[in-house]
Length: 469
Ligand code: MN
Ligand code: MN
Image (tube, rainbow, N blue to C red):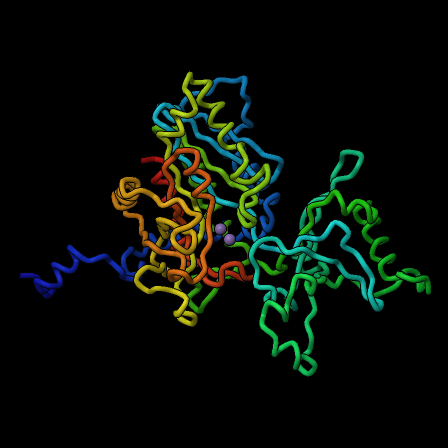
């Protein structure tokens, strides 16, 4: 007889019949935890170098090429194990690993988005008011506006010039760079502001960014401060005020990704949603050798504003790529789509004990319990969402359980508490099977979001096992 106390009948029966709700940290061994910590070192570096979608695409192209991916050429024929990529306007990217059966039995899709909420510059951004130079911004994606004043901001993006060249901008992240900020009213004078509802106290036209205060040449000419800043920009980037019209420029939080907690178990950073799924998807694509069916990883743009536009998932760019691959193999794309399966890799809201009333505890996802499968998102009576079928859910569960991937399930908050969506429904509308799988996030869409290292790693493992099942 062993020293270990035998489990009671009810304990054994519970283990057999009940869902395992245990903290994931108690369900894995130490070596798995070490792998998770290791995986997140480069993830944090990715975050610091991919604050906007263009930078994420640059990173992905470099990583893919280093791993043997080559730019897709529709005139070429590809065979099992070949690795190709398509760069869509430097704002979205698709990576394919050709499978033994090609597209014949459908393709395996992993799709994450690489855009995050931020403050875009308006087309005529610069102005001077009371001897201060400012940028007008137009927020992108769902933000709580009060979170953006008085944090350091960095300017990221690209300015396209009429001569066909373009200038890449990344200023504010390094310690030696200047940074920028949105100002806020001092509490002493904020009696009226603080009595207003949040949406009134901070509105979109309050999100003006402070960018300078010294006039040009000590000149008394009007708009001397604006002139001085424009002159600095001309000297640095060769641009004039009109060039802002052909620019994609955004203000993003200037701080770097940081380990969070005394135990360093979490990561606090800007843009986890959805780079925290994009990076694992990219790594799963790179680590996939010769899959059964062709595997396609899509890092898409425009998700935060509804996926409209030619680099978003409402565009035909992914469908057209699959059509090209199918045609080269003599397959009809509609037959390929009908047999295709997809993990829409996106985040879900982790249960937050401070705001517990927004959640329904039994159906929420939790930090450190693994990748979260979200059967449906949407709002109200399951509006605006694709609801993954029972059969497809079963097949995904089997893949993850067979490979010992830690996973959990979660709804997005309590019923009628609000809601949201992902790209899942756009893929489902193409007649593929799709479900959301990703990382639980605290403070989603805030300038600093929080995830657990273990959940990031398990999302990588989930995608890898899905690709290679
Ligand atoms: Mn997202
Ligand atoms: Mn989002």
